[in-house]
Image (tube, rainbow, N blue to C red; front, side):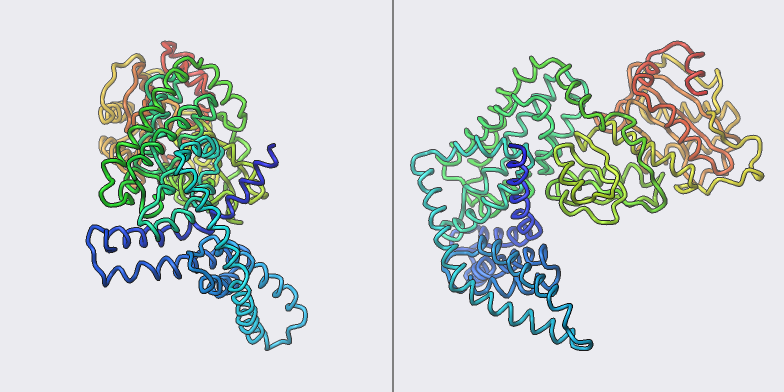
Length: 621
């Protein structure tokens, strides 16, 4: 069963990969149709002339070119674009599905030709052979597409269209939710939406001006209901704290992958989005809703923007129906699920625990790639968040995002969700992997951050100057022991604002004669530039690089706030605030030493409420 699912996933991903890079063209065409055709918002016969050529020629050529490129590289793109024109001319239907067939076929043909021709092409005739081979083989494939692939795909489209019409006639379209929602959480969402629904929907739009097919997978309502249930009723603290941020990213950002782990934690929850989506499809069918183009990403913003003229109110009601029903069904399931179920799910993922990145080695200029199914959704969000977190401490590290099937060869570390790990490892067998459950909040990302900071201290990179040679260091230089004393630890403090906590830590450093008063302002600036919240309830305020002259000696102070301090997002609650200063260019070394001392989550948990100063001093060496 697993091999079948993997095969379907791989095939669906291949189809999706031809469409996803060209979504912008679909959106441009969708807006053209929505605005300027006879029934559009701003009818304009002149501009409306662009609609048909863009759909008939441009989009199929782009898809075929991308398919050829995926198999045959740059020459595959050219020959794929040539070949699809034959199919376009051989049918009255839009040849999107034909493009998905002829493009990769053309890429394969030119790839095999190049492999064969390499052995006999005379020196100096390479350009001649290359250009004529693409031209002649492209011509032959175009003729083949005209007489065979075009008519064949026309027949396929007739069958699919008849099937969709049959489902709609007998009000059976909502049954597709039974297949769509489980497939989505298995990361087949892009394959279903862009590999199957988009070609059918595009054909319907050319005939009717709108299509419900674009709404079946992209509706953000079902996933929103699940996330709201976790927001209010989950017994698992990690899931409950991360759910509000996931709501924003899912509903407004359109990254549906963000809610999949919540379903996978408790598989029974899948019932909620299935029923919610089925109800929404029923509503959309009854009210004649449809989109004029694919809503990609599946944000409520793009969903509404692509709604056919006059259907906006019905569309938003349908989304609300899906979210409400999904929420009502998910709530009792989430509420009655013991926290241990989620803990067990996370504990079974050994690679996701703090310290999972302990064996990850990092060097100057390494590339970290966040990978997801399409490389454009959750991975892009995760890469942006992590880059913003690490950029000031490790400006040398490159953080990028990619599809799990197209991880760049120069990727040193790959961050990927567990369900996609096998595909990512096949794509990048030489990379080191960090397996996570959630791009929003995961201990493995905290551990990766700590590892990168520690590696920077050892290599002498980051936002500070390289460590001085041993003979040049004075007695104040940082060592592996954290410079902390009893007077630098304040326990049981009442919660204050984020700014007040930073200033209190800075003032304590001043009282230790470790820094000049100006250093405190630089600590505030550092947090404004990039949050010093590190995860696991820990914030580590420290000065900017240009404040190093204000540091007199290395020192660490600790302020404990048992009730917590809100530090930015709703999920960022700091209980332990470490103020640090590093002399002689060893600011980052001190930061690394603190980070190393906080790798054990159980110890950090105890630090939040302990009243034992001696125990804390022992913890920090």
